Amino acid sequence: MKTCKTEQVERLGEVRLVERITKQFSANANANEQVVTAGAGEDDCAVLDLDEAKAKANYNSKYLVVTTDTLQESTHFPAGISPFQIGWSAVAVNLSDIAAMGARPFAFTLALGVPAETETVFVDEVVQGVKKCASAYNTAVVGGDTTRSKEVVLTGTCLGFADRPVRRAGAEVGDLVCVTGSLGNAALGQKIVEREVAEGEKGEEEGAGKGKKEGEEVELKVPKKVEEAAKKALFQPVPRVKEGVVLADSGLVTSMIDISDGLALSLAALAKSSKVGFEIYEEKVPVAAAGDLAKLDLRLRRELAFYYGGDYELLFTLRASGGAEAGRAEAGARGNAELLRRLQREVKMSVVGRVVPAEEGLYFKREDGTKEEVKIKGYQHF
Image: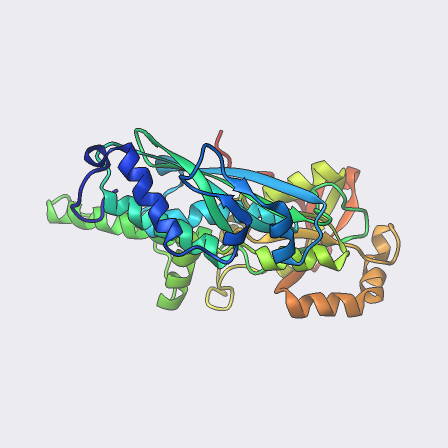
């Protein structure tokens, strides 16, 4: 994965590489610089002033939340992703976990592994992506590590504060099931990228005289603006940090998780932790570019929204103040109407179902009243 010919990190050496990286972070410290007593490259550990961090956030937080995520070239990098976007994504995936707890991020560390022949300009652009994403969410990059590896690997760790962290356990029968934003954007982006790669390979084969194989033409045709938006969602995900904080502060959210592994797996995780089931109104799930792709068949809609992952939206349950019985969820929603309207003004969200007893399982309920079990599958490493 190269950009242009420059000095290789092997020739630069580890000490100079670390100096080069830390200089880029210190050249434009973000708004959280006051919390860093000792930062990247200055000592054996970063030293953070937690009182200063809380004061800056104007937030008397009781809990520190910590998360770690790894991105690996052969597993996570779609064709066409830039070094900048790789760096951005390494931060964004961690911020998404912080968002799912309803927490405010404030510090980030990065461990970077690259092959010896990697060019320094590649590392520079990765660092710029890390810095840009961290700065956008008021998060200080306070340290990390570098090492030689067979492929590019980034492991990020993010710290955040939460006054009342929202857990996966907490959903109750009768709660509303909601999601932020729209789903399937990254999946659509991946399909577009795969199509572009296939078209490139096909062109090479035809140029070599191999011709086109019968029956292999299956195209996904979408408007150009939709293609661009979908690929950006894949390459440069947006963590819902602000939304997570607003939802947690409302006091109405009973459980929450990010949808990085697909809606189906995320629903299953919430169901397991909360010991409940879910009734999902499939027609109300906001699917990527639905207006432009109105003719999507059911199979493709499900694949995009439920089974692919990479959306980094939030799935959460919302207290319905009508009691625990499933049949009273609608009444509860009306009882919370003003609070729900306020949330919807601050957060782009959709109500997509309700919490049911665990023995009912996880199922789609259609407008005609029929039900179908939701298959539990999605993005998994093993």
